Image 1 (cartoon, one colour):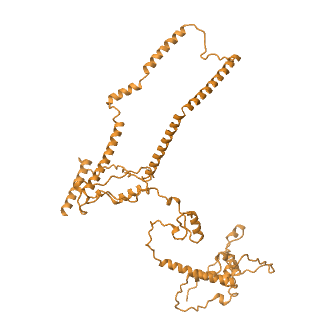
Image 2 (cartoon, helix red, strand yellow):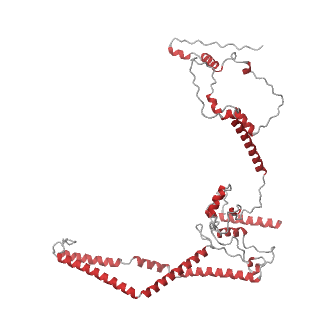
Image 3 (tube, one colour):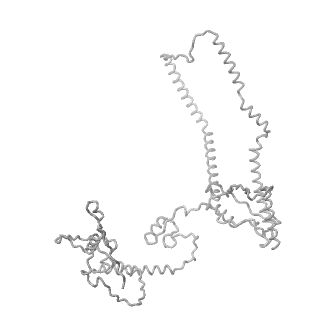
Length: 475
């Protein structure tokens, strides 16, 4: 037999005063009321049927898990009530206190798509369901075809193809159908062409995409080609040296060299210019000031008194006559100039012809310069593109075979310079960032008495060299 726990005896508390009422335990009353409210909401066991309380397990012991397709899952989910409407459902079993309440049923707005899908009653509902099933079948077939499709690599992606070649009649020899009209026509016949930016159709340079290297760069070049390459390199180096000498001649060599003492003396002389003259002027000013103080003269102001002198009528008439005379003189001069121009009209015509000829020559030079600029690299960034040095081997370095050839260039650098030359990449320069110097010192606990840090460094270097030599001997 199991032991029965003794019932706890309730402690009686004095409730004489009102402040002692708070000590009363009312937990059992609150639990009873909560249970009663719960039964009102969901009902008691006596009110429910056996089917609501128990479930008959009619499934077999070993059932295979059925894998539902996406279409079947969507159908099952369409039959279930929406989760967003679960909060609106009434789950309480509490009876309405007003039995004869006037319930107003609101008319639903719009169509019930879920009801039409699950229980089609009209022909258009059945037609919609059949169309939906056909759409899903086509979608699944399209996905499987896309998964099993292999990429075709026969097409050249760099080939320039005109869309008018695919549609007959759009590309005529006379050029009556413009490109815009062809785009409009193709869009309306169901073969729309994606419009690309205009910058993709015009070339930024007319230079060759790939220039063949000089024949003298071969591993086994002909003597004439190799000498031609060496002469080009020498000519370029001479041009660079000539330019450096010119800059040196017009900058450094233009100024004479002086010793530091002479430089300081000249600077002192330049900065002290005018000091002696100012001192002499101050002495003269002080002397004249003393002489004036000795003489007794009346006081005069610095600024002269202002007088309001008005012009007389005679002066005004003279001024007007002078203005009229100047105007008449200017008219006579212009008339005389026109007469002279009529006399020298042939020379003026020659001057205009010369000016027009100079202008045409200037236009021609500008056109040539613009045509030449089409084959030169543009300045896309901060730095200007400079042609790299030609890779050349000296006659003693030419091996004649690939095994013993001495490499003077890098294929990666060559392709990189080609992209910069064809305006595909901006020109850049190599930036060498200097690392901060780390100050090294030996700890006092590791120092040997009478041994400096430099001695320890030399010892480490000697030990490393000895270890390296020993490793080479073993090999």
